[in-house]
Each structure stands twice: as structure tokens, then as C-alpha cells.
Image 1 (tube, rainbow, N blue to C red):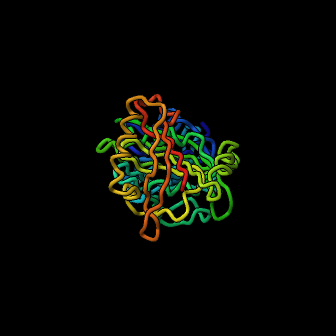
Image 2: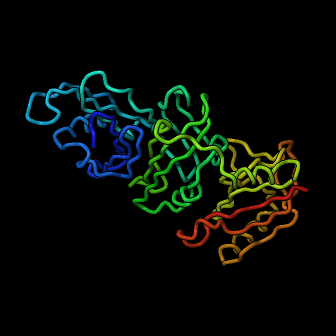
Length: 323
């Protein structure tokens, strides 16, 4: 691996588990760190991780390939102040621009997503947070989104996920790589790192299937499609537009959207799907409206087809026809 480029090292666990997830903007899939960075240079990576500060030095003259060259280790700090990754380079002076990275935390208890500083002006250079499925309103294409959500929802110890998606920014579409693995202390907590890889992977517009969903599911047709978790019946993502006038806002408990008296209907649908039913219908489900009243919908639910590897369906595709 060429050390003249910036090498992105995720530091999401114990030092012996660190790995390389990118070289420049080319994605690497959890590549062995000792094979990518010579062991004599690893103390600089460790120092950047320990201090949260850039470590830079001129290497001494030696018989090594990096003799006398400039070495630099730059930490990527997450919203909690911990270092989630280190980008490292050894080479001549006048290095290329550092990679655009940011650390993040996904909390599967609260469904809160927090992002630390970084990623450049295209994404805003401060700390950001989203609740539930809010972030998907910015994502144009993420072919492995359901797989990611199922992986996080299961949160089996020592799990990890790496994927790419196209996302809207202040300067247009970008391609972003995410690498995350869950915490040893709490498997429901997922620290990770984002990397802008647009230079290597051009962003993709929404898929044909997504465009078809957008066309069929809108306020004029009265039909809407959502991905709902089968654990607590929470909307994880709207596929297309959410129903107009539905009280669905960032920061609210989405379990309060259904009328309290209709919760048994939802629990019955959940039990049916978990017991193997191919579909289940609920007629006249009441949903909270922004004006404090209630919207009424006829709902059809079926297991999401891409979560079979995780046992019983963790998500249901829910089609709502608003009355």
C-alpha cells in the first residue's frame, strides 16, 4: 500500500483491532493495519489517537524506504471527543490535501445519530444530530440501507458494517463511505467514520425503483410507504414522501404517532408477521396529525424481503392509503 497517499485507519476498538478502511478515496475493507503501515511507524498513529492532535515529524535517515521523509498522523474526532480514525501519510513535502472525514455515533437505544466536525464546507463543519429516519431525507441512494439497518437493529457483539451512499450537500451530490462497528461496552452503540469518496466513486442518482416509489406514493394518490421495525413498531424510513399533515418530527417519540387505542392492532400485525404471515391488514388506523387531531389510514404490512439472514423479520414494509 502506498504511504504517499493518506491512509485512513479506523480506531473504533482496541488498538490490536484497528484496520485500514481507505487509501486516499479508494475504499479498503477492514484491511490489516500492520500490512499497510510498517510497525516502526505505528507509534505516530497511536500518539494521534491518544492525544486527539495532529502528530508530525521528519523521519530519521535510515535504510528504510521512508528515510528522511515527512510523516503525519491526523485524528478524526467524533461527537463525543473520542478519536474514531487517524489518517496517516509518509512522503515528500507538499502532501496532498487531507481526506474529508468525520466521526459519528449511532445509538440504537435512542435511534439518535450524531456527527462530529469535519467533512468540509459541503456538509457544514459543525456537530450535527438526527433522530430516527430523519437522515434519509438527504440520502439519494443507498442500496444497502436495509442491510445496514438490520445489522444495527440486531447489534450482535463484534458486528461491523461498511457501505457507500449518495447524499445531498450544500454543493450537490457526494458519495460517502461509512465504516462502523459496535462498542464492546454496549453493542447497541455504534461509533464510526465517514469519508467523502466522490473523487473515486461518482455519486448516483436515485434508482429506478426509488423513482417509481416516489411516483406512486405521494399526497395526490393518498398512498405512502414506510419501513417499520418489528421490535417496537417505529418508522425507520419513509420510502417516498411521508403523509401530509402527519405529526412526524425530529426529536419526537414516533411510537406516539398511532392512537393509543390502536396499539393492539399494531401489536397484532407484528405478531402475525413474526409468526410467518405473508401480509397483514389493519383498517382505519388512526395516526397523529399536526393540528392535534387524527388522520385515518388503511394499512397493509408485509415482511421486508432483504432481512432473511437475520432470522425473523426485523422490518416490515407498510403501505398506507390515507382516507
